[in-house]
Length: 372
Image 1 (cartoon, rainbow, N blue to C red):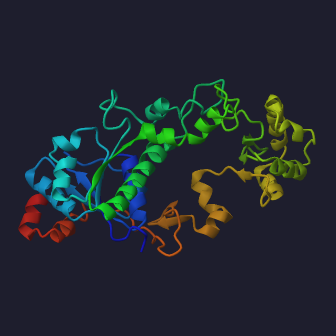
Image 2: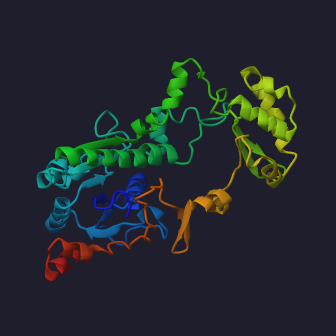
Image 3: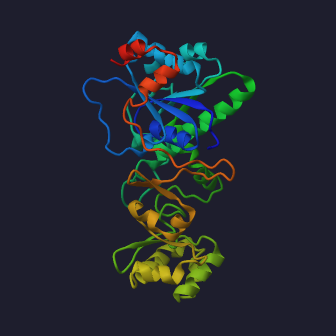
C-alpha cells in the first residue's frame, strides 16, 4: 500500500514526461487511469514502455459525445487529471478545466507543456533541448571548446517536466484536501529546468561562477571533478570537492603531495586534470575500484545503465526490479511504513476499458457501443 493509495488520477496519455509523471504516481500507489485517444489504424507503441507500468488503460474517442461523457464520468470520481497537449487542445475537445471542474469542484487539473500555457512561445513546437536552451540549463553542459551538449533528455522532459508535474499534482491534492476546491497546475519545462539550476544561480550571485563554460566547478573546468578513462577503456568518476576527501584520495593513490595545493587553485586545475588523466590511464577500472571503493575519495566506476543493477550497492538496496523479464528502476523514494509495492506490468492498450466503464455504471450494451 503506497502513500498515494486511495487517490484516483486520470492521465491523458501523451509522450515522454507525462507518462513518466503518471508512472511516479502509480508507483506510489495511486490508481492511474491512462486515457488513450482513439487513432486511425494501429497506435504506435514501443514493445517495452516502463512508463506505462502500474496503470489501467482505456481507449476513448474524445471527439464523440459518448467518449467525452465517459471521460467526464471518470472525472466525477477522480482526484486529479493531467494532460500534456498544446495549450487549448483540451478546450477544443470540450474537456478543458472549466468543464471538468464543473463536474468535480475538487479536481486538480494538471497541465504540462514545454513553454507554459501562455507567453509568446506557448503554441510553438519544441523538445527537451529547446526548453533547456531557453532556461539556461543547456549552456553550461559540455567542454568549453565545443557546443553545449544535452544530458540525454533528463533535464527538461523528466527533471524539469515530469517530476515537477508530479510534485505540483501532489501539492494540489494536499491543498484540495483542506480547502475542498480544485485548481489548475501550469507546469512548464522551461521553468522546471531553470529551477534545477538554483545552485548555479546561487554560485553566480555569490561571484563564484564565471561566465564561461568549462572553467567552473561542475562544468568540467575543475581538475578533480570529472570523468577519467582507465587502461582498459572503461571510465571512472571522481569528485572530492572537500579538501579532506581529496587528501584521502591523494594518499590512497600515492599522488604528488603538491596536488593538495592545486586542489583549491583554479589556475592549477588544468594541470591537475592532466595529472589525474595520466594516473587513471595506468590501471584498469577494476583495480581502481579495489583501491578506492569504500573510501571517502568520492570515487565511483562509471556504469552503463544496463549494468547498474549488478552493482552490490544497488543489489543491497533493491534499487532495481525485474518485471516480465525487463530490468528497470524500482519505485523511489522508499517509505518506512507505506512501502510501494512492486509495480504490475503495463496493461495493453485499452485493456482495462470494459472494467472501468462497468465501474462507472454503464450497461453492457452501452460499453459495447462505446468501445466499438
